[in-house]
Length: 92
Image (tube, rainbow, N blue to C red):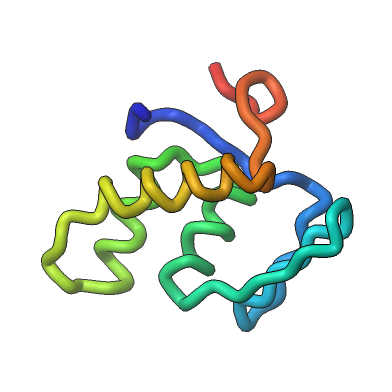
C-alpha cells in the first residue's frame, strides 16, 4: 500500500470523541485507542497515509517507525468494510 494513497472512512461510520466506533450497517461497535482515533479522524478528512504518519509522529513522539503500523491498521479497517476506496475516497 502506497503512503500517498487515500482511503476514507465509510460515511455511515459513527466515531465518538472518546474512540467509540459504531457501524450502523452491521450493528458492530468497537473502541480505538488515542492513536487509532487520530488515524480514523485523518481518514475521515481524506488525508493520505503519509500525512497520517507525520501527524502521529508529531502527536506521539515514540521514535518507532509508524508507516507499517498505519498501513496495517488501514488494511484492517478495509477488511472490516469500514473504508471506501478509489473514486469514492477521492483518489486521484
